[in-house]
Image (cartoon, rainbow, N blue to C red; front, side, top):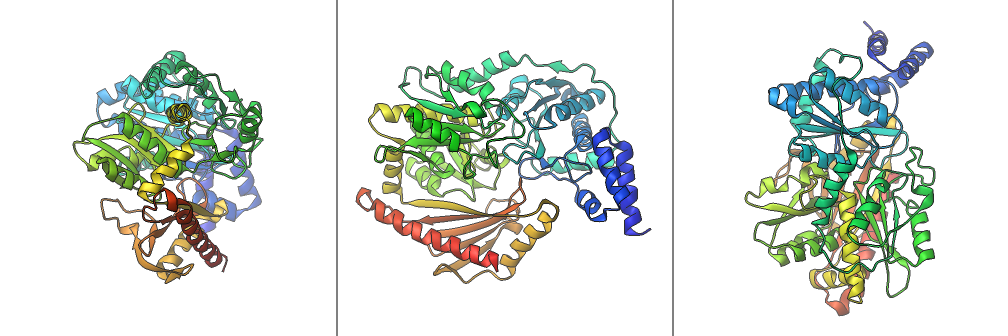
Length: 559
């Protein structure tokens, strides 16, 4: 049998089992047109669990997000649950979704398949933030949860996150077991969902709000002018009420981005990290003279913050690393005990490690992804995670949600800003003080986007080229160590990443994105503690080195 015949057979088999007439027609058109390249792209590399579950462009076939993939994956998940015994199936599954194209239909498919396989289902029928569903899993004592979301990805994408019984996203080997069960099983049963329990969402939001309120001091400063945007996502259903419950004035919400819209019409990418994504919010913040601007991504598990600069009067957007270390300092000042632990990832700033050493608390670096961060205490028995973050605007405070949570983080950020304002200072002043005593830790990123159809090969090729022939120097700084993380080690599982050390005060880490078609380079330039008087010079020197490394990487990538 030729490759073409085999491909045609696979496509025909998929069409026969696909419950969606739209994606059946899409594959049928490709077969009729003889578009073998497009068929290979859809069938050669079926979706696999990555940094945050399954995530891909909407479309037909096992390499795209569609109803057939959702149903098969859910059947695999339910069979893994059933294998744990009747108690696991009774504890069941929580199902939630965001407001993206296809999300509601996919969530209905998850509920239908699970119910047909005798797994109890609790369904959040409304499009709600991912952290709320993650909270619901442990709130109800469920065995697992599924959230249909592509988080901050472009509008044409969707995704499927699976949470384990401990409240965190699944990791190997559990995700691999789900994939194997999905591939080995017959197509899941079709038919109306029976016995699906629709969650009382307002009661759930109240319970979540109560847990979040425990993160802030009652009666603390609340004089704060806030602008907020959910970036066309679902955060607006929860965050304004959360802020009000804590006693803050109502935020001014960016009107053009207040209502969920799966097309994200005002932004090129619905990611608060992307240039231009915060333009409308910053403009409203300037017009209203707001103290801070808060932005969630579309499923509200990430947070961006802009603060008023007392020196220039303008709004300054903090990086994920800057906000992360400020939140960490705030949390450590509010907590106590020798069992405290803070954690971040191998691509985030090392300033959190310096802060942890100063505070005398345990510190762990993990692989990228909150499924690793929230389990950091497993590597330090007897400790509890009080704060975790990743540079990509993900933050976890306390234990209400075992994942990144842009809503509770926004509430704590508001408290932090209000306290600074009441003291006649700004969060930038606090950042200055941190770096003056612990050293400048300047970070930046460079991303190389790739076409979706060839992304896997191209990203692997970029990493391999750096492995085979790493540079001896970048921007005038010698590369003193090349660490390949494919073999794991130093408490880390194997991962496709490479770390280049540049002298004693610099590093570049490169890895393929686990959620988008791009390779990411992470840069960090550090200095010894400069003291208040040497801060500007130290930042200037670190910035010069950082820019030279970025230019060297860009030049190599273009060649």
